[in-house]
Image: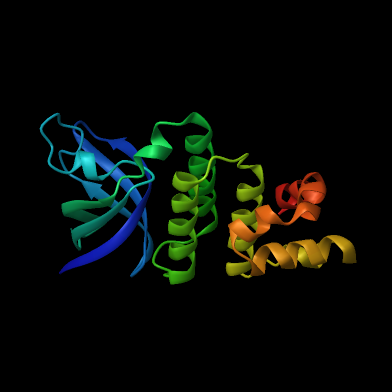
Length: 191
């Protein structure tokens, strides 16, 4: 069976001689591992569309053990992220977090759109990304049902709830959040 999906590339790894194992988070299917046959070859038509931190339209076919990519077309490359070490670090951190905390074939459009908004934020803004990382980390935990505000004091709970409910831009405007960052980072690491 063939299917199409809009996906953010989380990771890709070498697989066998010329193949790639690509981990994506799609709007339609959630996290998936897909095999890109010949994806490592220099003349591969798929390779350029499968860079981590890219938004791509993918065509896949169901396989016995693993689904295979049959085509790909990049929608957004997020080149500004890949050309800046701080942005790359912030993006890779979140993509790894999604990869580690989500299960395959459990779609959640909210996680997909959170990831897309975060990558768009990294492209558009020149900031210290620690607050943005903290914000999306807490938002992801909340979407996964792991409410980090349960374990903390009342004062920090209000800050976490503010982070979860508001956009990253609004969070950057709130001065009191910057004071709480160190305490909140400890909470996120414990989760």
